[in-house]
Length: 343
Image (cartoon, rainbow, N blue to C red; front, top):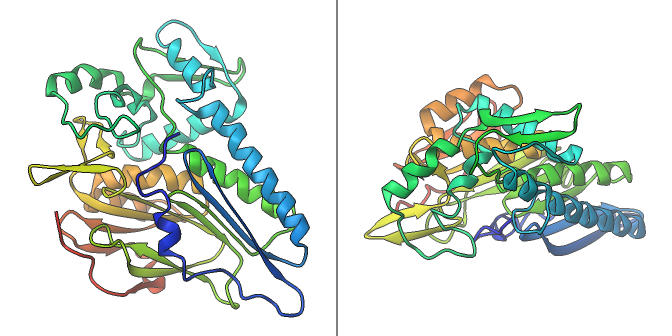
């Protein structure tokens, strides 16, 4: 999994929200920062047992490393690379976590009419937004040749046999749009199982907050997709996940036009209807994936989808710089200033 260009951005946005106030008689803040899955992983907890928290943090980092070894397209012999190498030829036995995340990915693909699709890997070397970014716009013919290979319906998962099969030769799964969210959910379980109740997990653009701050829900900032990326609004959350997808994370400008990494897989071009989407729900894996699908659907269709889904809320900044907030989040949404209007 590769880092977004703005991997540490969310932490800067919520920097003022340092979590629950320390109980002077008992609790202490414990923190650890490192790099996992190509992004900064930042863990913070308030606890009466700092040593136990540090031990739990060690387990979280080990779990991120274990999952990355399975799901990365950069780690030699990962399950994902073996699936891709066998595309169109044979099914491959893989870890149960890989099958589970693919089941979730297919569900989100169904919800979003395929705008979220982990088989976008077929376009990953046509549009170059990872370490190979060269700020070039690919030839339309090259894109058209790959589009038939993008189809989540051609992923065959056999849980009895423990296998995954890509039905077309040349297909490629890429879990960069869902893997970190899945790992965050595992981290939440680890920390809760260790008895921690007030904590924050931040992995790139994916955030989970548990418990409260000073007896109140956490107040988190939503980045302005333009300008300095300072918060243009805040939302109050507790025991929730918060994931932002934006056209400012990995992009380049050419002839006054912004080209970014969130591709509309129906046409193989960067999606044009949104600037940022902040998804709020109770599972990080859903927020991570669904934010991208909603971004591509755009403000109208994306908001209509969110309003149909239980326990899912969203803030969308459109390409026209309009801000829309889902009905269940409006009472917790506090605008600070209009987002910057720029290309």
